[in-house]
Image (cartoon, rainbow, N blue to C red; front, side, top):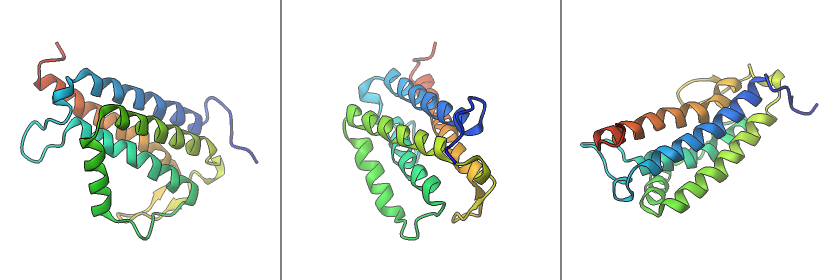
Length: 160
């Protein structure tokens, strides 16, 4: 059975919300001067570019998780952290292109999730999540990180 195209279905709502969250995250990043996108407000705080890199990478990973319903057994945290750091250290255009590409992939996977499977548990390293919780993750994660970037903008005096 094809996925629901009911505009009120959870999958349609979350796919649209995920795409909007990516656009909002991009706008927040671009609000920062280019020389402050990799700036950290202190200590172990992450930069705006770093949190956007996280979202760009994890949106593809979440799409895979939605399709396979399995967390990768061979997940390498150190490799992920290196990739995130390299992406964050690169140019903004490359970072945003990957965010847009992987968000589109995530939205398509979210839309394709069958309604009857939304309650199915997906084993995660920290405990099970339902498929509904998994498809909500990209929207939540990007919205959360938009707030972090806006906090950096407020410290810089850009949100007057």
